[in-house]
Image (cartoon, rainbow, N blue to C red; front, side, top):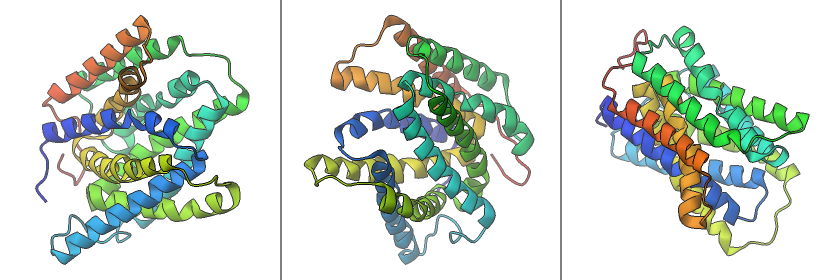
Length: 299
């Protein structure tokens, strides 16, 4: 598989995060408990990516080494962290105002920027740091009117989701380097899909099947299987900090999608904040200076 250029990877990552902004619209339309939706994402994503890997084998054109063949401890850890992150995130949305939960969770890119130089050996350029600052300010503006008092459990879950978000990016970078995006994603979806089986078996009461469940196919294959493979492929090229900055496009574009599809008109301050985030994303996309220098890895 031909390696993407840095700019191509950055654009692909920006488009992926923009597409993830539609996830809340899909989740709203599916009448299922949160754990069941998460499980469907894992299982359908795993099935799709397993089919892709099998096709690679038949064509004798593997995109990476066999899964579970390298960094096994890290691979197991990332499956556990991914499951914990998605469950904490959804539980936080249930127990805290969405704006409060989002604000805490999306402090994660700051943690990534602080830890990536020490853990991954990343070298940050001035433009990336400026883009991160602009994105954080924009997100603060977007969330300002949404911040409300929350119970201790909601705040703790939001903080747990933020911490696991940081861990996911830092754990995934070496895995994406070693396996490539497709195989790293397939391994994680399969592993997390197995781990969530007891949660679904003993903690979920399923209602009668409904036509809205068909949206899970879109959510599982496109938003999970395809999108996470692209995300991890880009992560291995552009670095953890740039990935974190572009992640702010997800909540920013979610507001835009809700305005476009549901006619939920945002406040002016929200529009200003979203525009700042889009500006930060544009700064990153236009940047041609590598922000990554990892021993043994060509960025």
